[in-house]
Amino acid sequence: MSIEVNVPILGESVSEATVATWLKKEGDRVNADEPLVELETDKVTLEVNSPISGTLSSILCEEGAEVEAGALLCVIDEGTKTSAQISKQVSKAMSPPKLETGELEQKQERAAGLNLPALKTLSPAVRKLVDDNNLDPNQIKPSGKDGRLLKVDVLGAIENGTAKVFAQSSGLPIEPNAKSSLPSRPDDPREERVKMNRLRQVIARRLKEAQNTAAMLTTYNEVDMGAIMELRSEYRETFEKKHGVRLGFMSFFIKACVNALKELPAVNAEIYNDEIIYKNFYDIGVAVGTPQGLVVPVLREADKLGFAQLEKSINDFGVRARDGKLAIEEMKGGTFTISNGGVYGSLMSSPILNPPQSGILGMHKIQSRPMAVNGVVEIRSMMYLALSYDHRIVDGREAVTFLVRVKEALEDPRRLLIDM
Image (cartoon, rainbow, N blue to C red; front, side, top):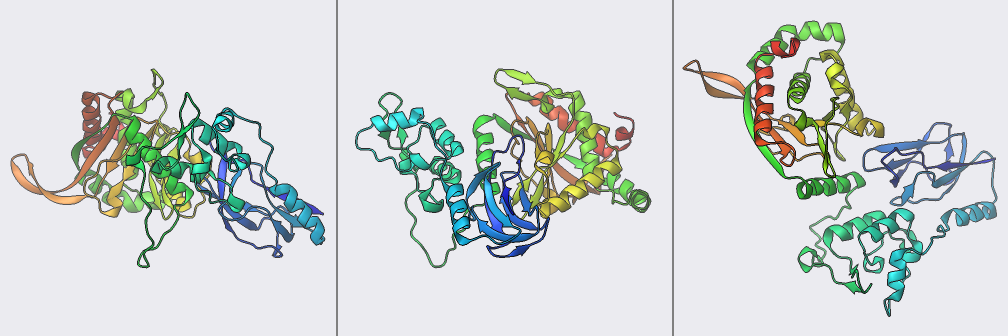
């Protein structure tokens, strides 16, 4: 008996994945629940396991291919299939779906002298991207098997401005903006070209979208971390012994931010068309760096979590993010984000918004500096804070007040215990 292995449901907001790495090759014996292939989405890397023990008789999607939920990845055979049977199954699985003629195809066919081989093999997702951006797919260099155009090819063409677009009135192609087109780059033996992985491409696109869409500004302040450092030092061993996790800085920042968000709801809101959506819940994203790129798992209803629960969740996120084990659901949503560049030694930065959120707090390195305290110069443990915000919804007064409230709570941690 043969079992087909399909792309699993990827999540509510994720429709496609890239076949990153096959962990097995055709002809290999596999055990039930043994990983077969790694898929890369714009949020996580996930493994697809074998549903049965048997032989991997055929691989139907090569590495680098883009696949949608439900697509056939491979076939596991409990017995032995003939080569003719395998060949027939492969041929059937690789046949492109029948596509209806869309508006873009009609425009192209009206354009004299145009050749349309690429259009016939577009997947629904690629076709939608081409249609939405009014592009000529024949002007985009394909990287898929058998010359198939992949979504990443279209996104790259949009980013670089290398695809012709069709004039709205005539349907004829026009050249892209020359300023956004990159000249061909000659090969240099001293350089190495590595294709951006799917996560890095999405990060690049979304960060650029944030800058293009939001009226983003950043305001700064500094906080004396001495009180929190003394508190951590006093209760570190007791806290770890009782809860099994170290008492870090992030839980204090989350508590301080939640209190400030309650007072200044615009920083926790988002713009949706011509409306402002105020969110009466506090799902805090915590930016985590991984070898593949930045991911932002979300602490749901952070206002209802204690210090120990926060620290355990943050620690768990960090470990699983580095191992690529975070679930897509854990990175959906979020009303506000905290990014800690201090772990890498950053003294000052301007974090970029995580759309559609309207605020992101940047933490930085704690550094000993001379400070005037009650008229006397003392060496204090100081940290610069940065709040980037969308000025379309958050006024300067609100942004500055938010940082002041965070500063006050951190410099006097007792405020966090009595919700001040």
